[in-house]
Length: 87
Image (cartoon, rainbow, N blue to C red; front, side, top):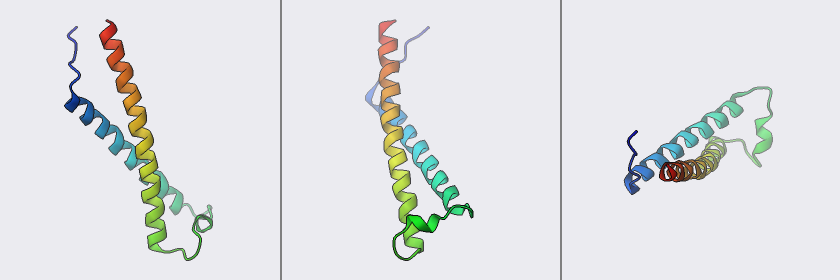
């Protein structure tokens, strides 16, 4: 089996995919949460429940999911690199 080279460009590309997938997942989860009628999503927002407040909620949730996904992706890629070097 041929070993894959771990270049900086490949690592950055893989981390970018992890980040984008996580941001998308965060925005989708936040959007679903805001659409559920049974949930009192208005309790999340202090003051007026406006479009800007909902957009800020989605962007913050997407940002935190993105950071978490990028860190997790970095850990997975480091473990994969270590495993491939030990073979």
